[in-house]
Image (cartoon, rainbow, N blue to C red; front, side, top):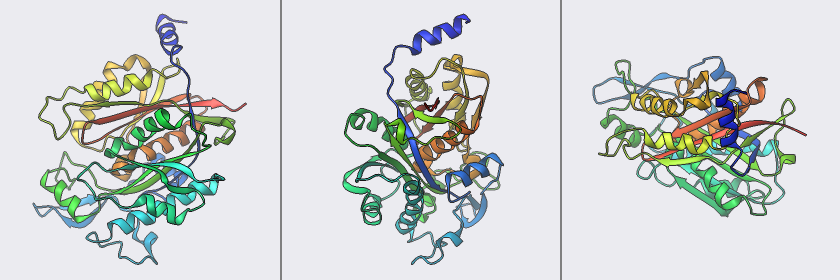
Length: 364
C-alpha cells in the first residue's frame, strides 16, 4: 500500500459508520417518467432543451427543458400556460414520482418525510405536504413532515437533518424529495432581469426546467434495494455555507463547497473516488466553484475522475436537483462493476452547499 492510500485508510477509520440505505426512488423529468428512463437518456446524451415561446427582454427566445405536455393530458389545467398552473403542475409530477417509490417499497405505517423546497422568495408554498397526505394517506402523515427551503442543496440538507434527528427514531423508512419548476412567468421574469436565462446568443445562462424526485431511505439493510448483489449506502453528508454566494457582496473564494467536500469525504472509503455528480447548470460561477473544491480535495479522487453534470441534458431543476442526482448516481453505481463510491454535490444560489458519498456495499 502506498503512503497516500495508508493516509486515507487512517483518516477514514475514525468516523462512526452510520448509513441510510436506498430502498427505492422515483422521478419525473423532461427526459422520462422514471429513474431508469431518465438515467438511460442521460447516459445516451439525449438533450431535452428546446426554444420556448417565452422571450427575454432582448426579444430572444429562451431555452427551456419542459416535461412533455402530453403527460398532463386529462388534467384540469393547461400545461402550456405558465401563468397560473404552477402549483397544480408540481402536485401532478409529485404524485407520479411518489407513486413509483411506493410501487417498489410499501411501508406498513405512515412515515416521516422531508421536502426539498426552493429558496425563500423564489416560489410560494405549494402545499406539497398536504397534497402527499391526501394522495397517500396510508403512508404520509403531514404531522411527520418537514420542509427545507434552500433550493438546489435542499435535498442534501434534508439528508443531514435525517441523520441528525431521525436516525435513532423507531421508523423503518424516511421519504426525502422535492419538486420544482422554473416554468412560471414570475420566476422567468426575475431570472431574465438578472441576465441568467440561456438564449441562442447567451454564453453564460442556464436552461430553466422542471422535475420531481423522491428517495425512500431505510436504516435496515434488509429493506434496501439490491441490484447485482449490492446495496447503496448513503453516508452522512457535508453541509457548509459560501460567504461569496450569488446574492452576496462578500468576495467569492469557493470555501463553502470546499468545506462541504471535506465533511462528506471524511466518510469516504479508502480507494480514490472515480466519479462526481454535480449540480453545475452552465453558468460560469458554478464551474469555478467546482474547480476550487476539486483542487483542494483532489487527493481523494481518481486521476481521471469523471465529472457528470446532467443539467446539460435536462436543465436546471431547482430544488429537485439533489434527489435526482443521488438517484442517478445510485443507478449508475449499481451497474458499474468496478466502481465502489461516488460523490454527489449540489449548490444553491444562496449560501448552502451540500455533498454526500454514495457507497456500494455487497449484500450479505
